[in-house]
Amino acid sequence: MLMITEERNDDLLTFKLAGAIAGEWADEFERCWMTAAKSTDSPRVIVELKEVTFVDDKGKEVLGTMMRNGCQLIASDVLTKSIVEEISNETSIA
Image (cartoon, rainbow, N blue to C red; front, side):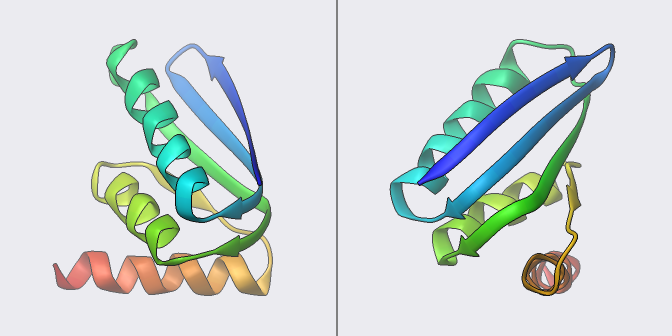
């Protein structure tokens, strides 16, 4: 299960995630992001991964797409820092 909290402040859109970014939940998060991106004038987007417990390949794919589109990923523990580093390396190679 994934809990998605969306906060808007001026030109900043923040997604706070808690739980697993996996399977259908990764798809749901991607839909939330795309809907929010369409409904605003390209704000800066931050994704807080502080309470994320698991990320599968689909979740990494979604986060990678977001990063390539200028979103900033905020990690706080070993798991999420490792995932962000992996995505960053793949993004810089592509």
